[in-house]
Image (cartoon, rainbow over all chains, first blue to last red; front, side, top):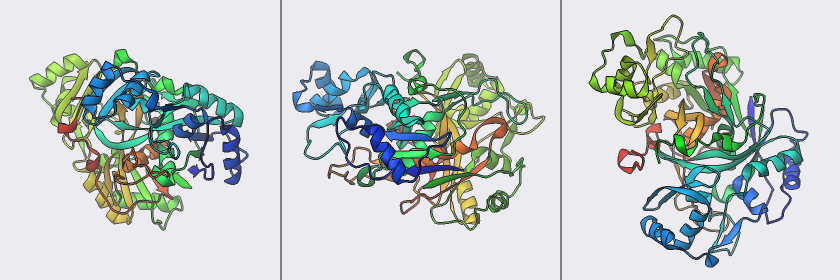
Length: 246
Length: 246
């Protein structure tokens, strides 16, 4: 049995907050300490970014020509688009209400992952960027708590409605499990040879974190049998040269 | 707490098998009866297709010109490609070792979901198609057991390595949860307004079903707070006219 435990009571996270001690407190309150082998702590991107102070005030962002052009196509504010471009290595698609970019870390996502919701009161023009290096953030939290960590975000999909959870950072587990060479019950080579384990864990955690007013910023997943090894969430990124949908 | 219970002991499923009674037996063996409100039974596509006898012997499939052309590009057997096309409404991408199609039900996926692994012994040239109508299959199982049902498959993603679970059939739950108009903790309109609930449940179940020799064909997810209402898995399909990546 795999259990997904929401961690309540973390409260509003502020720049400079020590996430390790906040999370340790929440784990203790939920009676989940000591941690067990196979435990994976899933932390939403939003509180990691907040603790790292990744806020930008759009009032101070000057849109350049490319941002103005894309703002007209996407109907998004030009200074917001400028900030999206500053976090992106490429624009994948621009259409009304849609701006899909390749984030500088490689993740293809809406608006370079920049977020306007749930970032605190009275911040009309503040936005929140992804952590500078989510894999490193995951490693810091994992080192502090002694467990595997996934930093989760919600991505849309090109051919399906609705978002699902994905891993933008990971530590202490194999983000991508490569099963090439393994066989099925009948001895046939497996057709599905790579499993996005960290994404699947983030997706499962999303069932407990939710969105909006009742959102929960972290989840413990207990009971997984993790394969040996570790790889960061960037191992999940299909590189540009293999992109059939540029 | 959300619990993901793998259902072991179902054994090899054969055409004509009664999945409702097989699943009821597995739920009883796992001590999960009676079912509780919010329970979602996730059944892998493979055993639904097997029970429905969705096998095709490729030896009897004659490739036409388009299949031969795509077989040369994808390096896949021409009769296999012919069968993929027979299940597809469109070819989305063809490249070496890649054939992404829009399945006749709308799902964009590799090889129209046609599967060669784990389909039984001595079936070198037999393949397994998706169920004729997975939403209807889910409804039949759900009606028989009195719970919500998701029929899961594993899809690749265009910009990320590895597969994750998705829902190709659903009954008794809202596959797509629309939160447009809801507000976050600070009263701001939610940016993420649609959540792919059935896909997220399939993805979570994938942590317990696995692939290959130790694969488990069904999972019970217990402890979800399901929103009111129901919509089929086809509600998750972004229609062709909104596809920015044709």
